[in-house]
Length: 293
Image 1: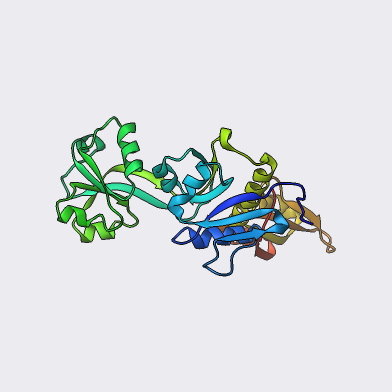
Image 2: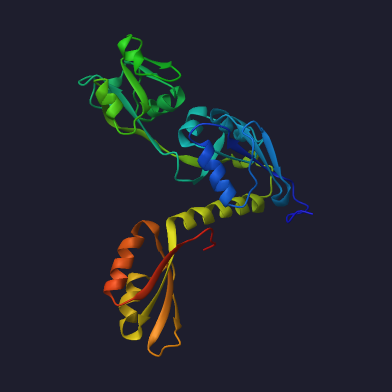
């Protein structure tokens, strides 16, 4: 018997390789779902949670989800937009971040309008075409290439490239520079079919999203515990207000209290410094595996 007996299985698309694959599997595992143990597995059934996982090429996931054959998918925002599939982003996951820019030889252009009539090489032609359309600019042509788009400039295939830029060091080494503002800031996202094509109970999807959200919150916070004299309690609590309010309990030693509160993980060490200065003792920061807020 499953814990959700009577419900149809939720069908979820997961990236089978690339920069999205490992982090996607990790967040699903942390959310309590069974994941494949062999990279060659194409389908994994998690009967306990009434979920079926399909491992697909990241570029294909939006197509499958948009068709309504799959209920949910994890893919990149860039891949979703480039697919033009009838699917919607419903949650950002914060990993596999990337930024897309136009780039070319310095002096080629300074803004999108100056790219009118120029040949653009990219691995994301529909995404780039949408960006031009949104800005009312008509490019000369968009040349689709899979990987190493920088070479297109040297060979005269294109005037400008549109690609992921991380640090800019690769562009600088090739004597290229970014043009205008970013085309897109992408990251891993959860997607669903458009409303008219959804075929599963909303409660099932809400439960899945809630689990992922709980992992994301847990990753971003730590639990801070400490003891503080009651004379310093207000000062200490002001440092650790928690998400709603800290838990304060009296200690056996008169005049002392134990405090527990969630604090952002990235500032945990600074918070510990402030608590120590405020008179707190036995300050502990522990990781949170999962939570529901």
